[in-house]
Image: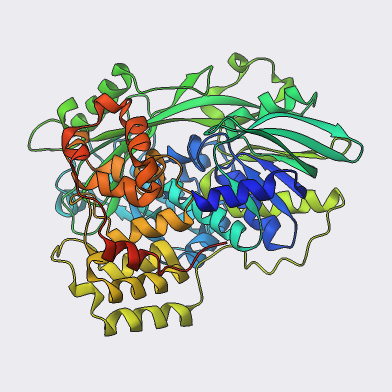
Length: 566
């Protein structure tokens, strides 16, 4: 909480080049791009960073193979270009993965889909391994979990996948922006913004405490995702684009695939739309759906669940059909899709032809840049395009050295793994099915992981799992408390980690370690309040959690050795 308060103090009565409204992927990457090029930046979000659309993605970094259906070749090229750059820049966080599609004779014959896959590979400048055509016999041999009764053949093409969750990837750009000098704070709501001479005066409110304060900026970036139109309307801006909404859901279930190598299984549903079975460690993620809605506020319905369960049960040869009892968690969100304002109301849109393209629009008189639509894969393009628009509004930027994104240099990584090897870090855990601890710490924390090694050397208990099935060690909690602006327990459980996505509710509710998690994150004085907030009332906090152990003096002392962030 100290980090957040420090940044609120910087934003209060501050004077910035740019105020960014919205801390999803668009806002986070814009903050990193502008701050990395020398602009003074303030980033705020009325919820947590990455808490709305950006936490409901498929965790995929992909070029949009399905957009070839509508001949959106330029969009596919741009997405593949960004995908390739992300995969090169985040080698520990994004891995190449096969998309394994079992096909009937409709909507496309397998041989025709294979031609499309090779075309996709070429448009992507051969940035992945080449695609493959799959016979029915090969599918049966390589992935026997797929039902092949009506399958005529298939294809395998390649894209990328985030190893951790999408919201954590969003926060990595927030961290990059902070390290470059930006001020950023979650749970800060924009109450109003008005032009005063050549500046914007913004009235902000701390959602957590109710405090209101002001800040000023020469320019505003409206990166509010599904809410950009709402902001623009309040400022009296007329735009060429607007947003419409498509709801998508995912279901998280126990691992369905039997192959040793992770693959994304792709199927056409009964409406001839693609859906996927996506690996997430010991879990599989089924989705996504595509439902037209009139509001950005959505939830998973019984109809959504029944549809996905029916689709997957018809296409996979499982030991027993999936039921609601198998669902560990669900994800639900809206895609903010871009259409022309002149297109009438939302119901005039040809829904089936909308893609996840983005549009950046600038009002030079009001000095507002609006980001419409977009997706995680396209984030680097968005960051660069918005920086160019801000520069056109008179904010001088330094030359783009492309150092505002990506992981640390190879030499830094090599030194970390040398130190981890010398201290035999990967021998401290007795769970052979888990990835090596050194790999995980490097992927999640980069340079910050060096201080975590020091803390583990001082106190070996810092390498112990706190919640058992959650697979999060004690030092990671101390690091989250110090540098990841965790304000509510949900921020950690759902976004900085993916615990809520892979651990059943009943296991969370009976985890004695959750009490220690809360105390590390929020301190003794605030732990009870945050637990009550998380469970919906003090009387609803499970007894096992209330009675859980507290941090020891030894682990507190070791946690204090971490280097304080900006």
